[in-house]
Length: 267
Ligand code: NI
Image (cartoon, rainbow, N blue to C red; front, side, top):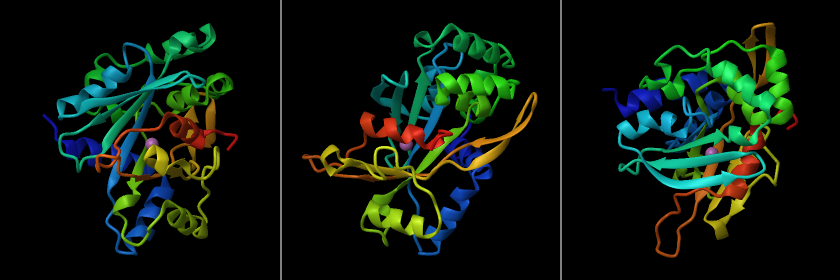
């Protein structure tokens, strides 16, 4: 049995910051202000296939005590998602989305099928499956043709299984009293923020405000050469109390829809 710390900190976090230098820099900047950073949620992406879908990816988290706590649909992007919570409220929520393959073109389904067929037997049953990376060969040409139909599919094909983003809970920062101020600080340090749907997605009315950096570009090895493509971003969330006084813990479909664009080529 492995611990939550091994899965979240030693596996997912280490892999995420290794691939995404901007996260390390932002962490250092916040630490320099004596901030203690609390992680609101970790977002994972996968394909809606019985071999690797949400239920499969959730398994290692469920074994460590996580339970489903909300379902979401993104019609235009052909995604569905579930968020999981841990009984220890100090642990980050896990947000897992999957591409609804049944709504995609036969060409895309064929391509994804070919990738999943290459996975080593039993790979999806490993405790570290959510952070096992790319388990297949992929050509840049395949990546590009997936991207024409779905940026999301191309991202999962290129990076495989890993955290797409971690999220700073802005509520627990002492030196920023608003998400606006944090964004201004980040921009001042040269970070580009995702402006799809406005720099801040959501509002106090929906009990959640979010912003995100644009993804770092990284060099990825394809079977026909290397290429530089967008990887992961860092997200910032401010949660608001509901009428019963408790902080809202869910997600807002309209906001998450825009946040997904942080890994687009066009942005
Ligand atoms: Ni998120």
